[in-house]
Length: 369
Image 1 (cartoon, rainbow, N blue to C red):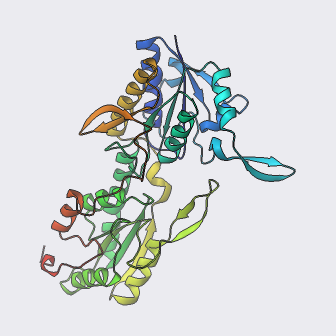
Image 2 (cartoon, rainbow, N blue to C red):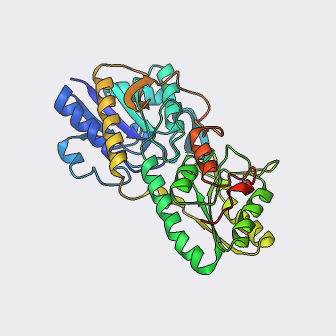
Image 3 (cartoon, rainbow, N blue to C red):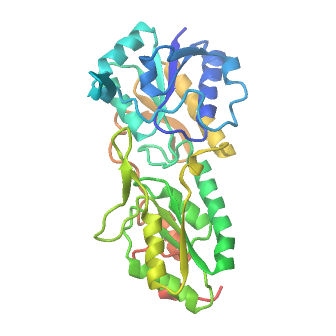
């Protein structure tokens, strides 16, 4: 019998509870292993009451629930713990304490569910001897090595629904409606939701945009009698020779993106014969009940992780590769975050539909629909 610990690091994402449930039920029912929940990321290993047993009763009814029963962790990097000393917050490396605590608890494996930050920490802990396997989750869908992450499908669904709703009010008021979406430095949410929601302009981080191209697209629609436009804008989008817009610094020390949607709306109103309004969808994208696909993917990832833990395959990660759920080398999958291919099928599809990607304006697409 093995003792398996499971944690959810970083922000929350729809489908986390489905993955936890799958790990627990598969570990108990198939492999006869014990499972322990770790509260609020890696920091829970050192917190009083931060580790507790998980059984069938603990995961009953959580499949359709958003969030995570283990708690999210916006801070908790073991290599940079924030601690109070002499009345001031200082940063200390607590990675050795975490590894010692794993040994003291008798945990044979840690299943870390997280995005690029959580999994990067896992890689460093593995190099120091920690037994960890990973499950990729993030609504941004930017984890290297997997074609899909837990939470992405639900976020895209929410973003598409928002565009559908903005369509009616944009048409009623003859406005350009700008929807700012999450994704950080990857434009997957904006691209997929933009195509699915009928956006006229999609701006993503991977393709720096020119305001002139946006103005021409919107003005062409006005000239032919379509007095409204929809724009799906990724929070990490930026103009050519320009810079990204940041709001402030988060507790983990990473800059928080936000504000490009409002800036685009202001520029449209100043240069086009149309009113413009910006909407920031924000955390609505990561909340609520997961879609059936996210539940399905998370359940499969959880089952794979339970098997990896049972087989003591340290350093592996569940992944979707060529449409098949499998596992890959977590340590070797590190690197730059996965991004949208500017020349890939998704962008080509958008251009073929007459959607302006911000870098150029294609006049031949402006026909009466």
